[in-house]
Amino acid sequence: MSSTAGRPVAIGGVGGSGTRIVAKALSLLGYFIGDDLNEPLDNLWFTLLFKRRSVLVEPDSRFERLLRLFIGRMSGAIELAPKDLDLIFDLARQDRIQHSSAWLLERAQSFCHGRTAKEPDQPWGWKEPNTHVVIERMRHFERELRYIHLVRHPLEMVTSANQNQPNLWGPIFLDGQAESTPKLALSYWCAAHRRIDNFMSRNPGATLMVDYHRLCSTPEQHLAQIAEFLGAEASESSLQKFRDFVSRPGDVRRFDGIDLGAFDRGDLEYVKKLGYET
Image: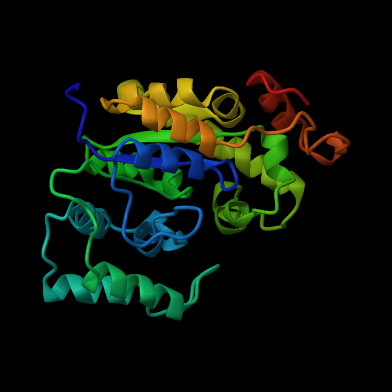
């Protein structure tokens, strides 16, 4: 096993890109991915602590404190002090875009008082699509952290029912634009991809980009690639289970027939530059 084994790993991507598949891969490789998960395997402690617009203007001292609490809780190496409890529950006091205060309070209860299923010395990581928004800042404070980013054809993304990220982060990434349209969704995807591509180019040994369609076409090969990146080992059993878990997409592209004239020309040129067919 390589020297990278045991380091925490995060999974992100624009919502609807298929990050759940990579979360499943982590589980099959023996990783603990959290005690408070939803059906798509999102880590809801991350959601509580970091999925909010205010995180982008969080003072470094507060951001790092939240990150240390998150890492400590996920790794099972922390006991929360009263001041920590106050900080966590303070994050659940008000409704947010997409999450009610009552829902956030359940997450705070789980974070502060829930038991953990993590085994001693078990490697850990998490999946929450919005991770890409704060991953560079997290890496600044935690250099051991690695990151896997999942990408999917951007024109499939804009026709997806999942537009949570463009609605939440679009007004910030796109200078105040808030209209929920396929044009905005593509502009958001391009802005997010430029941002994460720049981050990954500066952190080549700690980052891995995975293409959704290629993963679905050759799941065993990609599980082996992910395992190598993590310094883990993919057993024959895990390869078989992963192959059975992954659903291969059909030949019909769900964006066929879409009106390309509805999109920004610069965004379409960027999509083509990346090698995606339009």
